[in-house]
Image (cartoon, rainbow, N blue to C red):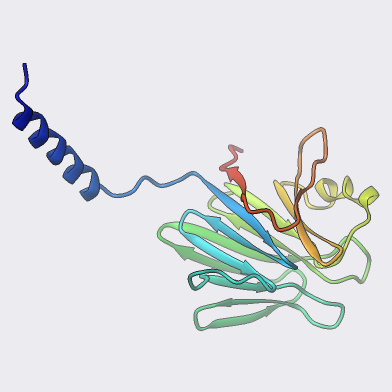
Length: 185
């Protein structure tokens, strides 16, 4: 039988070892809709879209395009407009993030942003303009490979998982984040 002192010593050694070990890297991320924007977290990245504010400083601030202005990316000292087909590639703690401006669904409409995390781990498309419900099904065709769309509906961002048989919209400033995981391609 173990003595009480030996058990306490073992427990304290295990606790010290656990606290010294590096934290486990998550293979997934989360999106929280905040008014007209969203907070996106993935493997150490924090991105703030449009009007979203985080408790800590965001690594990247994304501003959606309008009919008269290109999308904008701000990351540290980098501040760049992204006209259609332009891209910015960033890296943090070994995780790559590529941000590309793509044509919107409507001809001549504002550009959409495509966030490509890792080596194709997960892709989020962010249309800059509102879409009618009957256009939701066109997103997967127009942006092949996108896993999630952050739609603007009635001035609020909502999440629409793509590539599923049933389109289901999540959002409206939910307290619980939409969780996603790395997609094997």
